[in-house]
Length: 336
Image 1 (cartoon, helix red, strand yellow):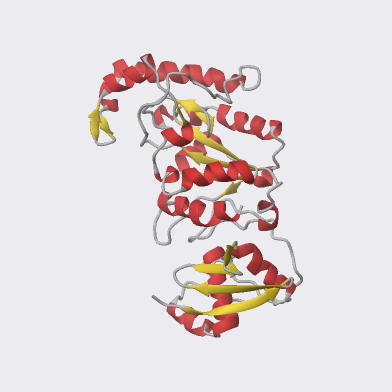
Image 2: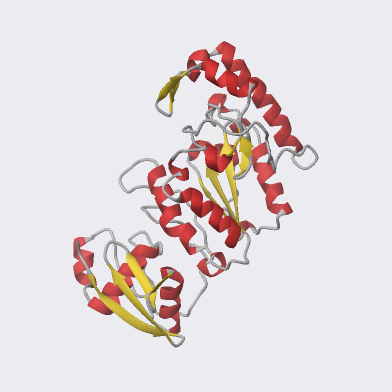
């Protein structure tokens, strides 16, 4: 495994040490620190006239940024790196310090849209993350439904009406298309009778605990809860049955894809409900982030100013949910 020599620097009277193995680790007196804000500050304070971008002109994400800073300033092997990694370049730009607020709706390569990390990492700033539900779910739960943020007919009338219609459609599938419900659930084969029972004798789990796909594993659940508590992060989930959920809303186990009969794509109730939620919670639109595939975006109908964090893999035609989940877990959420 390639190792870059340790790089030590002083910022605001504090000594930091940056070491790169597989991922960079930044320490101060033996305590690990958040990498990107300090590195960015170090560059700006020392007035280094450099901006690190890839061949598409997009600013590098944390790990790539840290690696290239080390290689450019510490090891002086940027030429070697460019030879080994032809799709990336290190470019220098002699210009005044600017705040990068620009957002891009369609990220390329493995890079997110340009993000205003100064604002995002401020724990006082209210932020909203919108993610997808998952077909994989955890069974069981409690008999009492405890939280349902969007179940308010006066505040979200269109969403409630759409939910009622969707529930009728969902139960209609039990009789009209029972084969739709034949699937593997947690290692067991289930059928329509299982899901009928979930409606007739409902058990509830919070959405963040019910869903069990890529966006709900490997520490992401813990990060959602942690950042909701200490970083002013609101989290909403787009659901095939419920439309939109606050991540703590308690829900049943169900099986209904977001694009089944294109139900949500033909309505604006999810879009309107999230706009209302943003208004009620006083969240600025430039602090709204979403990580959703095309079918979920069709249901959400995101505004251009909302930032798309969905990652596309180079050489693949479509975005990849694994990369997006890794970006949330390794990059976006830890830096809030």
